[in-house]
Image 1 (spheres, helix red, strand yellow):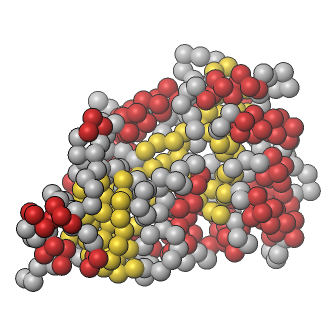
Image 2 (cartoon, helix red, strand yellow):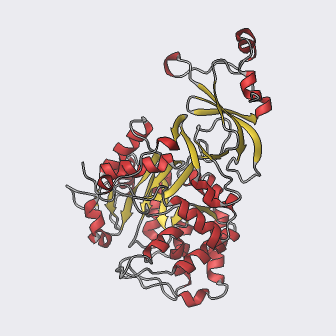
Image 3 (cartoon, one colour):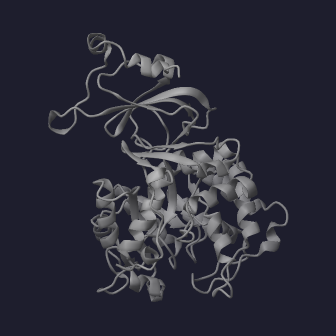
Length: 453
């Protein structure tokens, strides 16, 4: 077989290689970092620009240092060459809505995280749970003590009545729900600077505003969180705070596309747990009220974490109580309309999917966005990579394939631009320069799913 140009370059004499090599990168303690070149790949860089054939991605340690046509790649002394002929390179994917520690179960969480990273997911956004566990998982992921995407998580704030929810007891075991830094009840009397500082001390990236708060308190949380350098992730309707009030507060990301439909209600439900279903008759045609909301979101740069997948799951649960407040069809419709209006949409799931599925539910979310909400496959890739990085404040480090970014990559055997389902053909994930070959993936076992030792 004729050797590739990339391989031929690496057969240059040692003297020539030294003369041509870029400056050797050094890691901690002055130790040289490993250079790996992924050559001959079909590049989908996550920016939305067209596919670039026969490209080389040069990584040193955990960073990308060059992205060039394979024919133009420089010679790096002692580089490891990985020939990706016929493969498609994408940025590492990001699930912008997971729950890993509502009721902490380390063994099952590790299994889910393993499935994520071997499926091309290099970061996740955890939308509130027990931060004691989440801090532990996050550290282990960062230190490569377990196969896992990087984990960014939130501390939750809500009105006092929300903390009757049994999930809050599961996430605060040993303490009183609403009275801990990661699950805080907010009232007019709350010392907001202290509450935010304590939440920040849990290692949380953001405050999640959940439910049962008026607009004035939502505004106070957002203002103080931003002052202290934290992001704000909110439900799109907080009850009684409306979607427009949540967006106008300056929240960085709002979750659950169907909650936006409450903006068209005659009156906002006063509380989260006794909310009525949205009035779907108002969406048989165009809805000017929600269109105005989309325009405001676009202007402000508010990101919509749509979670279409969770509405599909809601309707699959027999006799679910409470019943879903929105049909899957309406969720798909509003997500498509928001996208066409120019709202940035990330790809979040809010449910992991069955434990025995070979790939995580993020793939289902992407397929719903494409097949039901009018996204192109490229749009879906951007949602799960570039916009996903925006949700966690990490655009400078991930979301696209470019020099200076983390070496977070996924290689698939089939072109996802032809069919978004081809994103299930993962052959290799690279997270912070560490390789996870799909052939090494160990599927989740029933015992892991049940949390058994």
